[in-house]
Image (cartoon, rainbow, N blue to C red; front, side):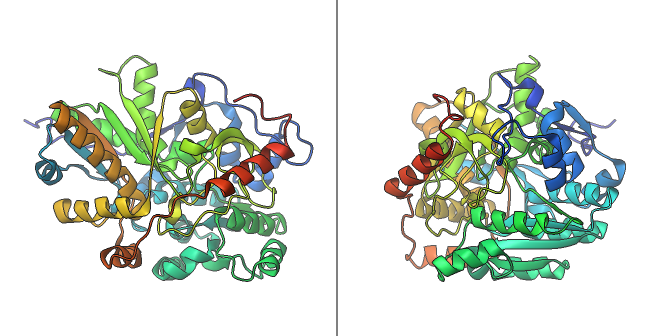
Amino acid sequence: MVTRLERAIEIPRQWYNIAPDLPSKLPPVIDQHTHGIADKKILHRLFVNEVARAEYSGERFITIPEELREVYSIWRPTPLVRAKRLERYLNTPARIYYKNETVSPPGSHKANAAVAQAYYAKQEGTDRLVTSTTAGQWGTALAFGCTIFGVKCTVYMSKSSYESKPYRKDLAEAWGAEIISSPSTRTKVGRDILKADPNSSGSMAVAKSEALEDTESDPTAKDAVGSIMNFVLATQTVIGQEAQAQMEPYEDYPDMVIGCVGGGSNFSGIFWPYYYEMVSKTAPKQVEFLGVESSAVPKLTKGQYIYDHSDVMRMSPLFKMYTAGHTFNPPEIHTGGLRVHGTAPSLSLLVNAGLVKAVAYNQPEVFEAGALFARTEGILPAPESAHAIKATIDEARRCKAQNKEKVILFSLCGHGILDIEGYREYFAGNMKDNDADPVELKRALDEVKGLYPWLQGND
């Protein structure tokens, strides 16, 4: 007889799109030129058609093509692990589980969305995908997806990460991608920024502007998106769906789901399926959702819920989201994947409605948590993942102080093998706090509100 524990976990057959189940309708995307509601044609010109369609279709479940599921089978389903050694170290009554997304070929959850966009790009005859990346996890993942499906790939990578994480560049090039330090001389945007500041370390907003300029100048290219948009977040829900099936044999169900937040894709990927069970009244209990961001770019905890661009040169449409402002100049940090000024509109709406909580941590305490996880569970986590680990440790310690049982699930969204330079700095005792400058944050937010006062409302 096959026991419940022996039952195979199937790769999900559908992605879940949260849009129909949000507490209110998503605010419309705004055309950056007319300042009216964006025409669907704009989205389809910029992005792969399936990405654009999912942004306005409201389709709850999206069928995963079998050819794509076959590619997923290279690394999916990913392991669900109970962190018993961490529990013992903390001496906590909490039960801690994590979904290990580090086993994908690029080493992170980003592969889930990357292969999907590369697949649809190939299907519609797109010759080249262009994208922006900060830490390089998304850039390497897209390079992997493009080589699987035979699509050309160009990646603009923030200079700060391009120089501090060279092995991500090497990995992307091994998969055939062209990877460019941003700001670059390749685009007018890059040249203008370098003229104003030859030592610019770049940012996601700068790299995004370069990618958009490149895309708009080439009718055979489309912009690939690593986060923010509904389709991207939906493709990550394979994480949460698998976790639900994997926890069932243990007869456990999370009280809290935790994930780090840059644009919001990995956190949404693990918590959206649990949110669906809550709104569809099939969940056995209420679940808390906690997003963890970097104090260097604290858009959820200190930013504002307003309309903003995803790029510094205002070439993208306007999305209503929690933002630090598209011209916000974040300090250089090793957690490049969270060095993003804006958060996905769907996640932003849920935070604004009070259905998702947020917390921010600075670099040293995050690396301390990452090192502890390596010493207890054996995996060196990416700095981004270490944010979720830090929040998990804090919650587990509260459980100990209150002598309260709690089931905590978090997303280990990437490994830290290619982030050794950051850990080296931490172990040498040279890592300092990199909190956002409040004056710079206020300046950037005031600039956005000044540009579009009629859009911003009273939120």
